[in-house]
Picture 1 (cartoon, rainbow, N blue to C red):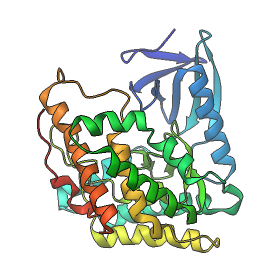
Picture 2: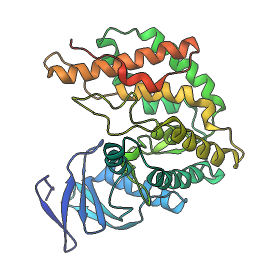
Picture 3: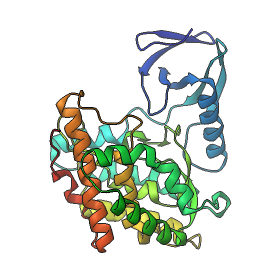
Length: 322
């Protein structure tokens, strides 16, 4: 029986409720008490389970896998321990609404998880030899970025030139395991969840981008992704220092040296989609895609000019309807 968003699903005699009916990859998240289950097409869920077990064994702050099994031949599930009740996105948003800022108490708790993650990521035992161009291709395949970027009138040549320059500069970056979509939506008090996109890439890419996720290029668009909170420059600097220290203590180059490349690639990732913009879409969806493409175009220009990418102001870039 394939679970549906409305179902109460039985796994080994325990009733699980569907709490997340859609993910970045096909599948769902279920919950029963303090145990979570991830369920979906057999091949992809088994892959995620293998990655989660491996990360746990290699010291990453991730859930411990408890049970797993097949469902109707084509689906698979695995259950895992809870890492907390609320994501830091939820915590930060509630505090921002109440106080106008994220409190140091909750932010320090968030940083403790980031530190544990950064130390595992920087551990020499967890290094990899992936080439920068391979990382870039896996993160932002041309077929998922260029159709949307070009649709809104931007030029391919500048974008490709920026990627080539970034690839060259990233040859000096240490490579390790990255979550790819790390942000406070998937960071909880005891660790990090949602590893369906896990892969390899520059050490610090995901941790540095997580602190810059809110109030930048990926939020603050009211109709599609309204901002929940914003971190101040001192808080972001705290995160940067933790990430750099974890790397340099293991003899690695400080990840902040590649911050401009990371910002460029994250901006391109925000444009990446499996479907191409259609004039039949609702106007606000078209405008949101236009906004992201405009952000990438601005970032490409700044990067090629050698100007520091002003990620703090990207949320003010206009969208528009086509």
